[in-house]
Length: 150
Ligand SMILES: [Zn+2]
Image 1 (cartoon, rainbow, N blue to C red):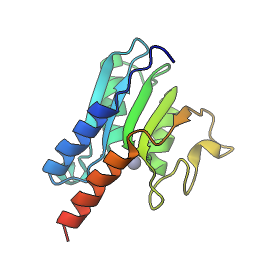
Image 2 (image 1 turned 120 degrees about the vertical axis):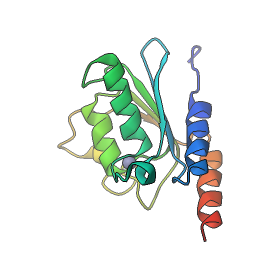
Image 3 (image 1 turned 60 degrees about the vertical axis):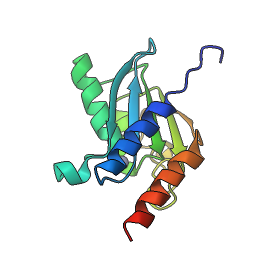
Image 4 (image 1 turned 120 degrees about the horizontal axis):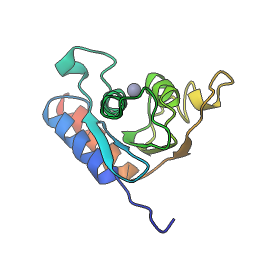
């Protein structure tokens, strides 16, 4: 992939900003087919008092609003942590073409762990999945966040 550009640095920056707001540090970025950043977000479940305000959901919502469409064909989503089942379902519904994520999440993940949403027969759109991108950094952010709250 000669034209491969990683957007994980920006997703990690969103995760760090979320931690500074007292949110679980997860960040997500949506990239248009031409490589433009269409949306970026960090977790806001506490700030918004909204259990669905995960970084991926917020980034998809913002990208759809910017595009004026409920689907994002050809778009890529970068996220620092393996998406949960809710976010994986939203990624499928939005027709995201490629999913890049950082750390695995054996406890809450729904892509390679748990519900494995994209492998389910009811899943009609499966993105290409690339995992383990800068996973150590994403994991370290989460670890230090949870240790600091003990
Ligand atoms: Zn989620």
